[in-house]
Length: 227
Image (cartoon, rainbow, N blue to C red; front, side, top):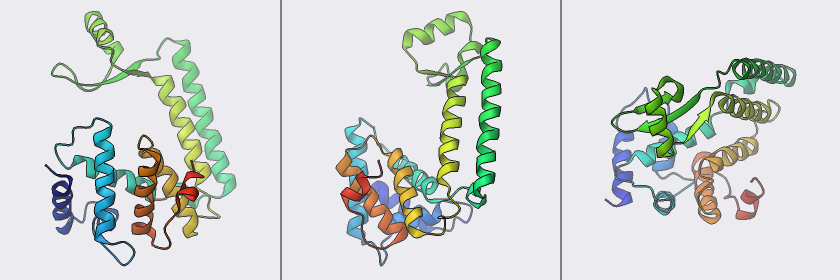
């Protein structure tokens, strides 16, 4: 099925009345033309995304890939509630999170409780599981398959790192500025499509920013400086 048929299906979905879909506002801007971006530019953007996913070996049999991109864009577009906190409160919040995760990290390490989390979509296991909750033979089977696993301590470290980054970037002194919002969007959305070729990534981000914020298109040189 051609990519444009997937796009048309998603358009039909958002043309209906879905008041509970919090992503509808973002989706419509990325799917339907406006004064800031034309239908041809949007179609090209979705084609670029489709081809980039195919290059990565994705099997795009339905329109789920479009909803995934819309979710990425929604998360990158919306400022977190911590944006309302002043600098002192944000520093206190970062300290509280660091102290709490550090304490939990030490407890699970000292007591041999650094469990391994893995995901599987097989008939036997479908979802997220802890390796330690399995029987020994199942653990050995999991290891033979080479299934990727992540420890709780790694999750805590990653969580603390990302949260600190988000809190630090949520600058209350700049949150009302359009440029700040655009740059934040480019950084976060760019991270979600970081495996795309740089030229393709820039084209996608440029069109998205125009669709969501309007204004002059970002040049490649300006986008590249943000990564």
